[in-house]
Image (cartoon, rainbow, N blue to C red; front, side, top):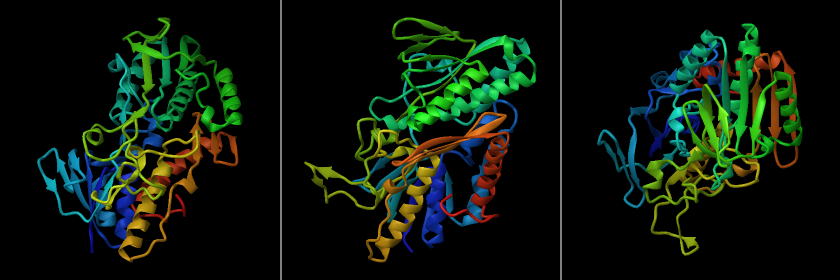
Length: 399
């Protein structure tokens, strides 16, 4: 069987490895972490409702469950033309039949970003956020600001949902402790209507959440810099903050920007609908470059509707498609599957005391409140994610 090298151990990379092994390929997965991190449920680590261990799955356990080869190392460079991948340890791969790039995205740089922490950043930051919140709770009062940013070169690279969720969960934690009135909670974003991509109904319902939870808003001002105790906007106005949680927009991975892979203006890898990397020269396909490279997940340019957003379930659709498409190529067939037909926004936005089901595609957009039970449904999804990834319970089709 052919050898397939997968770079990245997140939702996209792991799903690709699992489904390619089902096709009996020889699969090697390279990850810079020795665990798979369940980002959607990490919102409960800062509030103490979940431990860090609760949102991690040992990649060695996943390796044993599915049979792929595992290398814990970081990618140093990629040369498509030379069919060469070099890892930071010095190990070189030059004998793969297919390459799947799934290393995720890097983050937009903001002046003073070191003065913030992100729930969508390095996994360890969830624990640092917990420490900062716990310190303010011990103090008994404070000003806390949560926000997210955008990438003007790629509007799909924004990720604000976890920021909303964590803030709502923090509100409920403070309320349960009887100290909510001692804290000023503020949500900020440079766009005038953050969350608009979820649809008009969802946008209106978000207003209901903010009024109900008495959360302040600061929208429509570009961020100039972050200080230790404040956020400075482009008009030099400031927002005082004892702790700032900020989710920068995604940006092209530094390894990709230095490679010879084709990228869009933001540095995300250009692919066709089948997630195959397509090299062009003067508007035509460049046949001198390899056709055996695929890119899935946040590292890939996501084409389509204005409201499109990089999400884990879309990354997994791409991954399953790639496994199917590679097998089609090996069988000499052309029944390829594309991701565009599956583009949608889908999430359960948790609030600590409930949740809301959010959905949008090209035909409809809605948010469905799920008081109380919604919180436990998302908790249940976390359990499902763990045990289905490990192959201990059946996968629900399409999930």
